[in-house]
Image (tube, rainbow, N blue to C red; front, side, top):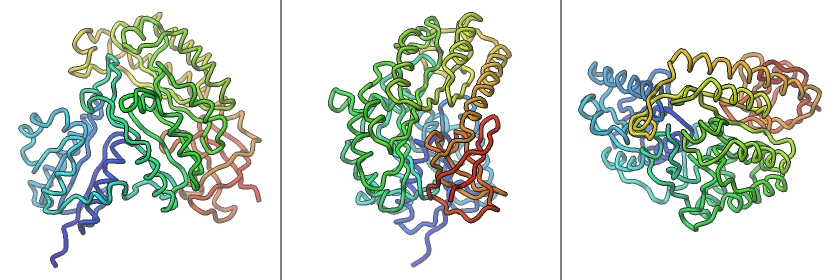
Length: 434
């Protein structure tokens, strides 16, 4: 039999896209293809780009990658080029006209057609299987698609459609399967975790799902990403407090704190409710580390709004925080109803000021860990160090723990008790205890 051509798969954007790519890779490999993921220099006969279309920078990155591969196809070094994901879900017709070198564009949800177009068949029996692109000891688990929120600035509901929860038992089976492959740490992800179950059973089922998963043998760490503050399921906090393998970590995007901005953003929550929720979370789950994302420069953000935001960061003292400047995204409520009236230089100045403030807070929080003994999982060797993380650190976005390699060989994917010796603005330095 003639060998199948090799395929380069490039994933852009978030971890939810990564899960889709991992599912596609498993299907392609089952069909006999050799698939390389995110190669520094793609050299396969076929390339597949899984695109992001969230904000302007992400769209530009996706288009630049497609054009680069289109040039390779024109030069004869690439035989076929396919594009899938969020960007092509939203702009499929426009992209097909503008970049005819692409053999076919797929959306976010019909990537299974790609397998058929390559002359093979989708394998339903492999539905829960993936080729992990992460280190083998951790994986992302997507519990839903889409979003029912209608935040003014966000294009994601336009791309992904309404919220659709995966069946609870299906998620349980997937996690069980991953534990048999040696996965110990699970990042639960969704566009909006806290809405899980409402579409299918008319009630929030996140607490029940997390409790079921935490009780599975082999689940060492379970971490939660992308909660929403309005109608937060407080029962989840009891489950987090009672289950030691649920990380004391919650990613909850708050975006702003002034009532003016929260109304403009259509967030469905107030300043007072936000402060009360944070107080309740910290009281119910002592020691929890909160990650949030904030936005500056939304239309009509005044200097007074921004001052409230900086005071919020100063008093809330988030253990983990990111921020970004507003960008006008066509089709969103903001693009249809507001003028983008905060100058770019003002947006950047506000962003810089906010992140400088957070850098100091993060350094103080990191310094408080010096002298503590923390449980650390080792991800990889890098230079003179092994790189690990505590339960308070999600892969790729949060601080890491650096362990000197000269002190002995460590096993990747193993947990160690580590005494923290020093810290810098973000990362910790530690020593494994015998």
